[in-house]
Amino acid sequence: MHLDPLAVLTAFGLIFLAELPDKTMFASLAMGTRMRPLYVWFGTSTAFVVHVAIAVGAGGLLSLLPGWIVKLVSAALFAFGAVMLLRGSDEDEEEGETATRTGFWPVYTTAFMAVFLSEWGDLTQITTANLAATNGTLSTAIGSVAALMSVSALALLAGRFIAQRVPLRIVKRVGGVCMAGLAVWSLVEAFTG
Image (cartoon, rainbow, N blue to C red):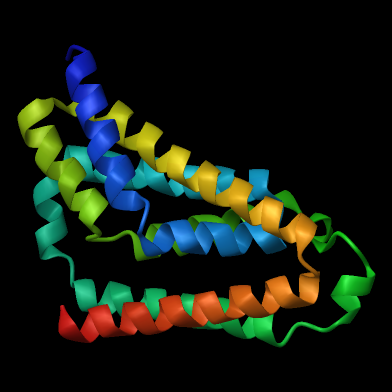
C-alpha cells in the first residue's frame, strides 16, 4: 500500500462536494445547536471512519444491504430527534447553555448512531467504495475521512454560531423542523429507492 497524493485529493474533493448538501451535514448542524459541538464531532467522525473502512474494505457489501430498512430506521431516529427538540421546555432557555448539560457519552452515542445509520448506502459511501477500487484503498480512505470530518466540522461551527446569536427556543424549533424534514426525506428515500 502506498499513498498517492492525487488520489487523496481526488477522494477529498469528490466526497466533500457530495457531502455538503447531504442530510448528514444538516443533522450535524442541528445537533451542534443543542449539544456540545466537539462531542458531536467526535461521534460523527467515528461513524464516518467506520463507514469509510467498510466502504474501502468491502465495497461490494453495500449492494447486499436492505437499504429501505436502514432508511426506515434512519427516519425513526430523525423523527425521535425532532420530537425531542420540538417538545423541549422553555426552561432550557432560562438555564442558558444547555449544551453542557449532557455528558460526552450520551452526545457521542447520539451523534455516532445518527450518522452511522443514515450513511448506509449513501452516495458518499458508494463513491468511496468505487474510488477505492480504482485509486487505492489507503489514499481513498484518507481523502474520504478528511472530507467527511471537514463537512461535519463546518456544520457544527455554523450550528454553534447560530446558537450563540438566536434565542434557544427558536433554535430548538428550527432544529426540530429540520430533523422532521430529514425524517420525511429518509422515509421518501426508503419507499422510492
